[in-house]
Image 1 (spheres, rainbow, N blue to C red):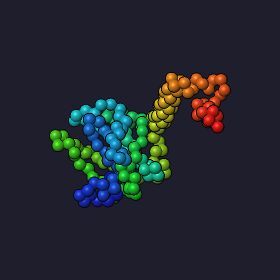
Image 2: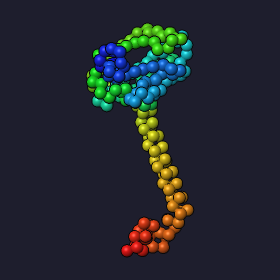
Image 3: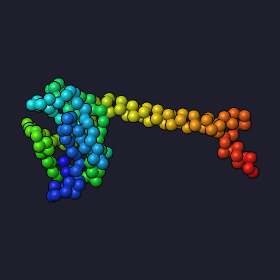
Image 4: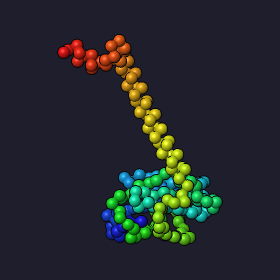
Length: 178
């Protein structure tokens, strides 16, 4: 989905949403990153799959979900930023096959603009769990860096010497040199 017509250069179109299939279903986000969207099973040849893309215009993000078994969409696991954050709306929808050795079929296409919150009725448990996991991983990485710095400081003797007088090495040097 683009704001402007395609006239030779993709970046000039202001691409908001770009969906692709490459061994799995992906959304192309800001900076050209490929993000795999939640899927309830493996994509199989010659089988229909339903794809749901929900768009939040306020934050310019997309949530993608896939139903490969016809039993409902898998819970959403993450959001993807628009490919071009300056996109202000969609004026054009391009459907095409990018695989030169494959065939794609479109059975139906429905584009609907819902009033209110774009994500209402969406199971966001996966999104919230992913945010908690990302925060924990970031905290763990920070703690690992602090522990590494402390270990280096102990080897250098910079931290051991603070046990008697409570000053760190820089404070002790400043006190000795003044």
